[in-house]
Length: 331
Image 1 (tube, rainbow, N blue to C red):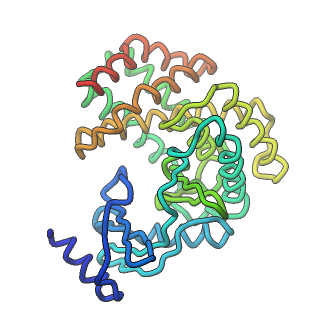
Image 2 (spheres, one colour):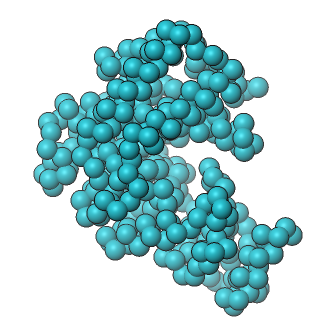
């Protein structure tokens, strides 16, 4: 048993837990780990987050914000912020990703969109970190540095660098032009749990920020882990726009909202491809490499619909990125 596991066992013992089983509950794309603690008929989740890498304070704070709004976020039963341990209620193992199929999609997404409307309409996110230009650029740099540079070992030519700079500036401008709301920042099928009551259970919200209104919507509807027909996605986005407009969250027309949505998705998917690459190269987590081709497909798809992304489409095609990503995933 390593030192951190020993500290965790001592902490649990101090809470009265001595006879229990502890097993991995999920894989996380960070330094955190989640463990399921089973003691008799009781099942709880232990979060182990090294405080120098993943402090627990934001999780505790945002969990309270979500629960105060009437949404299903885990209850923090016990905490040791100094050591980085939390004991949480358990939402089970039925993630949206594991449950989604053509027969369940409509009801599950209806619940997720209802919850998103509550997040954006009832939670004051102005005290959260801002989703500002610096953060937007750092995220897109992950694509340039980790995917192109490290995974594929591509060095852009000067004219390609110019295309990259124009594209990323357009995506920054698009994000900053949108109304600012509470942004979960990872609102997708891996982080939503199917519940019998109060669906969905919302997880992995500790990185929440105050940012663009379309960010969580595109995270949900153009999910990096599961894809739906583009016309269905566009209709869900437009239906959500109508509801958000009625609630006073946005005050633009449908065409402008869909334009925001498309460009916001490009920014997010550039970030995601970079993160998936880094998870393999830095952290040894290979499983996400298989999600890169799908995510690049979103980028290529939206580039056909948005004139501002023509340069990005040409870059993807010229560098043969989908095929090279598939080769990297197989290697």
